[in-house]
Image (cartoon, rainbow, N blue to C red):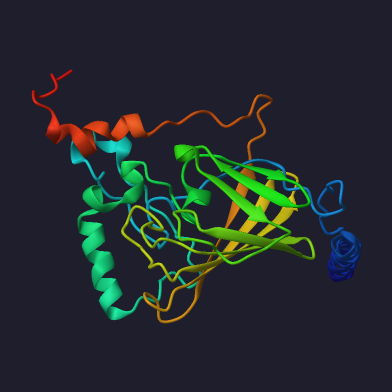
Length: 275
């Protein structure tokens, strides 16, 4: 009798598991793929305020926690550890360029352009710890950065090559299905990718791909090409998150006044009194 009961129980368990598997499989198969809301022209609506939530601002490659560039500031300004956003983890530097990156890193307090409030460049401006706003129309897409008030215009029509080199480059865009693809050239070669000295030359070519993947996230992918610095193109990818506060907005960050002492303090006739 016990043997019969055990056989019936085992059969019941097997049938129950099979029923659960059959019930779950169709649900997974029927899960609809996310479809982004549409703008007036039928393209995906990317309008909104977005922000990266990672440590790429400090170092796009995997890195451990470390001290601040100004050690006297203590733990609150220390560098948090991060898994990195570079596909494959390591940037493919040329040997001489890697040596310069290491030198930049050792002297980043003096050399990092963003510390001096210069425009952050592309793609760094997209993953600094400051929000960005996307404003979309059929002819132009504007990307507004809170940091330093930087502004990018992505030309969707009337596209021309970069007329001159600049900090933020010259951006032409197109839609590849539901993905916005932005092709940017015309850089002045003076921006960095992060606070760890990763750099490029004026030959930088950046291709960004922005895809709305949920109601509150974008997938941001970027391909970097610069034969003067890297042995081959390389890519980064990360989510950008929507700021969902009712009063979300870009605020003023006039960083020039924060660096006047750093840049011009040595020119004072009299030292500034300690606070």
